[in-house]
Length: 324
Ligand code: MHO
Image 1 (cartoon, rainbow, N blue to C red):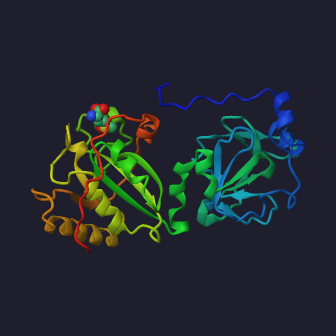
Image 2: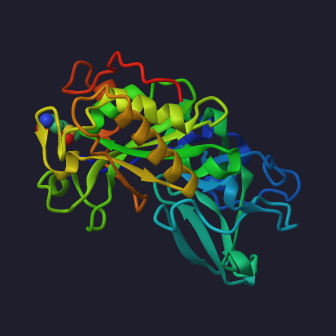
Image 3: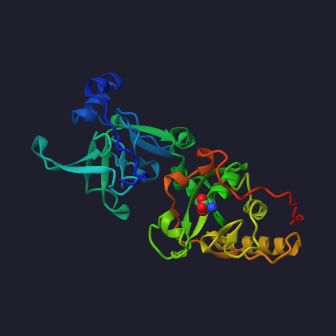
């Protein structure tokens, strides 16, 4: 087990669960019970958010995959993470052969999966008891330590994603996450040529990836233009493959655009910064199409929040670029 592997959940004793859960929750999760259709908390719930295991809090399903199956139980076309945090078991009870769905961490009985789901979404119907779940609305995800899932709701909520590289991602993330209009950030590796890279690989410079930050922001509160101007104040965009003392292609300055509109704005802002004459050397920031963003290890996420006073070579310079 690497230091980054999450600790396996320790399920409380049944006597403790009996006190903690409602009789319905206990019966569904611990005794393979089934609640009544149309008389449960979430069968008709349409709000955006995640459904977590009522026992462990493990995130299992998303409102983005929920649909109205007419069955009277919450129905999903797929689980949140493929099936990696579910176990499927053959269930021969009541003279039927069904596939039971259980959660991985707390081993809660959740419901069953059937093959009569919407064909356009893969044809599966995860029919899940509300009593086995707890719904966490989007605006409470952060409070439940589930902020990284906010990225999933970008399109639905009209939020935008920016992907920027400007040296060691600790400092870039720390300064950007504090900006008005920024909903969430995450650090990772992108722009290289190996799958699922680790920090140890990226740090050799051989994988071609850059240390990068993804910023989820509300364009009504923060314009992409203004986010880029900040980016051009918090790092030195004139040093090829280097930021401060950190040297290597993983520390290059780059804007990974997510759309043609972002590409156009990025070129315009880079030119604007170049023309301003406020840097002595030319701007070397690359403007390249976004490709797979591989999340960095958990200990790198919000690193400077976890390690106050930790290493950074980033700061907001007192630069005033001319008005656009
Ligand atoms: N010079 C720093 C860079 C860390 S950053 C995540 C270090 O080697 O710790 O690349």
